[in-house]
Image (cartoon, rainbow, N blue to C red):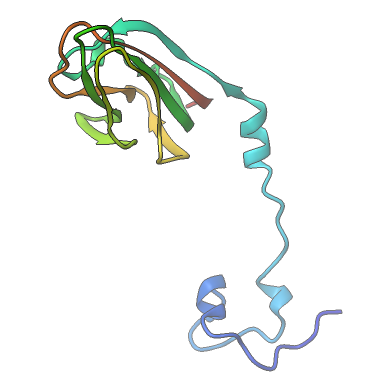
Length: 160
């Protein structure tokens, strides 16, 4: 049998939305019940890794080489990474981006590669949702020569 409430922790009633017209419940069990959230366990069991093949890095957003969420899906994005590479006399400064509805947000710090260098760049902002038409990609600032990159991500695809 539940114990009657004699005192409330600050903010508890507003948190559970139980104070109605100034009346508080006598028993917390009237408004709170345990829940087991299996959403993350289910999402982990459906993990996929869409990847983009190696491409030549262009100045600005490399949209033609991004990973795009297909129509009828939304993705839970856990991690995005890029493998960046430069040859002799080449250089690139790049960030990972998530784009939706014409707006791009940087989701990583900047990688600044000089000549003959390779580096992994990984996203910092996760997990997050990306709707149909959204893209995961690379934005580069005035690369020199023909540096290359490839993208990969860990996502859970949901049909909507």
